[in-house]
Image (cartoon, rainbow over all chains, first blue to last red; front, side, top):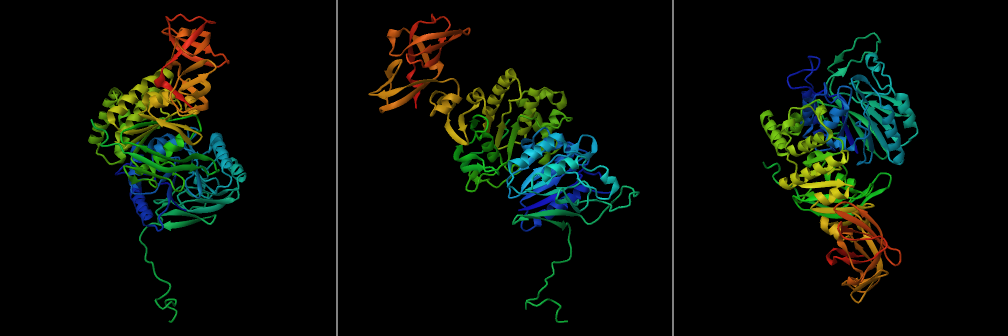
Length: 274
Length: 347
């Protein structure tokens, strides 16, 4: 199974730029074209929050228009720039799957089970799964202990060293870790929010922050550094689940020189004769 | 206005569903739903009706070997977004701070319909549903029933090939539920859209369905028109689940059904053990000498226009019948039971 992960797309109304710099829709269009060129084609696309910049219906509609060419199912969760109600209203299929008034839901259709968690807190930048969400997670994991599972949410449950983001990460990470540790079928946790690729371990499993297809939060590990962003090469995470193992690749979006063959028609390494 | 060019005919073949934990939610089943039909999936909690709806919607895929087609085209692997289905369910899932008209036009906006045209189409849907006066209200200003009407309008505005309604009235109070049920019925008939309606409420099922699929433990217990399901239940489960059913145990021999309460003519092959099923309204009370079935009146409940009478047979079997309020029925008296032969079934 192959999953493409989009995150922090921050779609806005046409003619407006994020932070007066980024035309986020153009980057998302490129990401969609990129997904369509992948071989094999991903089985599903997950979107780990901040689909929109201001939680406006028009922004959700634009997001959905841009993703319309994708033939595979799309599974979003809200980020702090979105809202639970916005995502549920824009995606009736999510609303039908969701429980407990939040956009928590399970995707049981694939070899890898996806548990989508809504970590958004109304009006606040930080994240919380909350008691109801943790109970949902506990019950969901307990119901299928033999199913390899991937948890997807917006907020990271760990510190990255980028201070202005760390102060708004997942506040109930310890409670989340306790649930995950009780269920060894959980293979990984993935999220967004920080707009750059980060990997660590959390609760004994692999945890990743997926890169954003548009602007990246600056890699500023100096605690005094001001909050800034860079226009680094856009990319997305590609999760491959095969033979019981979950592997995460980073796939850069754009035209790059290549592919160049390693071997010539004679089967010898090209350039080895020189 | 025509909201949908044509509803899709739906064909399910070998569609079963086993959940991740090994639970068999749905036994493999075949089902054909003609274009424009309102099909009601009826059954108790956990019977598989919602799983079946989700397979039709594209929210679940059937187990290997199962296929689903819309107008003959296989849609088994298409996600919900690509099936052109509309959904309405218990929670309203509307943009709370947006106007009714903008909510209804939302799906058209996603499809790139220009503003003037999408507003025109959204207004037309609201007019058809007679809620155009709500167009400029915000969702937060609406009652539960109004919100559910808007949710239905929103689902219809994109002219889906199939509309899926999953217990849409469950969250509403009884009076409103009945009112809205009538509205939905009239709307679905006018639109001739293919509709799949999931409910656990038999009154809703009988009122709305062109056909009803009664489900039990992941399998179809009976498919039929509301009248067939109500008056000719094919098994005990359907008889019990759909309304009050009386049962008389006995046998069938030489064209007569015989029980402890007496006998009556009934065509069919001899059967040593048979149960006669009938609804309270399929029976009427008469003098004992006018019929072969005689009971003793145990209880009489006056209900205004009608009275409900509980009778006991010689072996203690109780049956419930309805009688006109003016009929003289006294507790303790012996009374005959006359049954409408067209509304009996034998299992």
